[in-house]
Length: 231
Image (cartoon, rainbow, N blue to C red; front, side, top):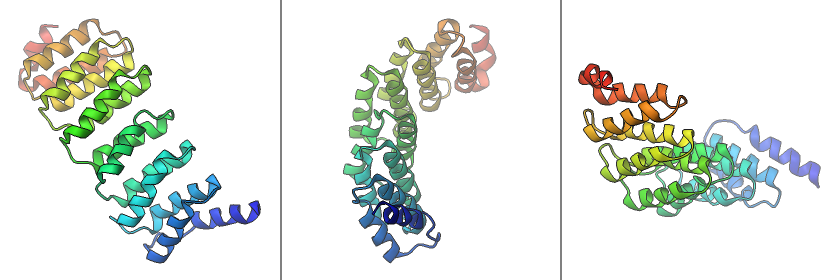
């Protein structure tokens, strides 16, 4: 009966915050329920009752990243972040796929999960993310840049080059994220990165100029006076 399922879902949400293996097992089982409300409640409950680093909980929740309801995909990402277990190859691949999700909240949370749960400098993951930079949807290209910044180590020449290429994008939101990536990954004093940001500051449009100025300051550091004076 619907009333029973609804009551069960609400009960799962109200579980105490103390980790408990038996409650974790019950919540994991509910992740397979046919009613999306119950699956959503199970993801929510696992944030409270799953032990930090729990492999069974993490593996089960990762399967929800392909759920047909965006609310569940988002809840699954939040649960994974709470559990905090380093992602397996399979889970990391699903996280990358979420970068192209149709829901903004899912894309944003996926980038955060890639940052916190995946190793820096993993070339296979970086290359998978880079493919989304060619997506026809500008919001996905923007999210892909966020993920690129999350996965790449400082000084990663390939990722820096990819971000620099995105400064030619027709959408200001994508250009803004590209500047953010350059600021995060390029070394202080990187002449090529500074030149790219200078061009963006000069001709990138008013929406990106304030952040470009901050990025230029950050990249230039001790020599910022002469650099800003050249713009």
